[in-house]
Image (spheres, helix red, strand yellow):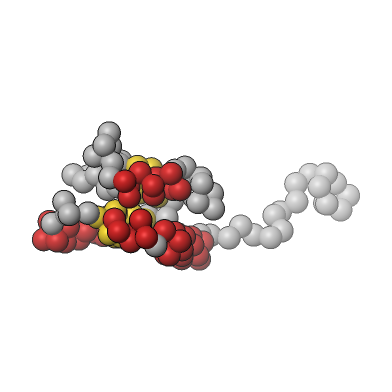
Length: 126
């Protein structure tokens, strides 16, 4: 599929390719365990799938469960959604990326606002 993407995958990649969507870096067709999702943002732990007639819901369910167990969120869009509602698709993707970023920033340790002074940097008599 990497060499011959669907029209919807190609169009979506033109918008998502590295750092084009609000600075987020997404990769196309990158292997994660036994699976190769259409698009992945490792920083946000988000996978974006463009689904056409080739997708099987039972197989997708197994695949999605495994990817979720690895900490990834998954967004799926039908090819016709991408073709006819591109703005809505991009809004949904950006919202998911930003929600992920907000969640991960809450988990980050915030550095202390006033680090201990070192010799010559604010010490009295230093």
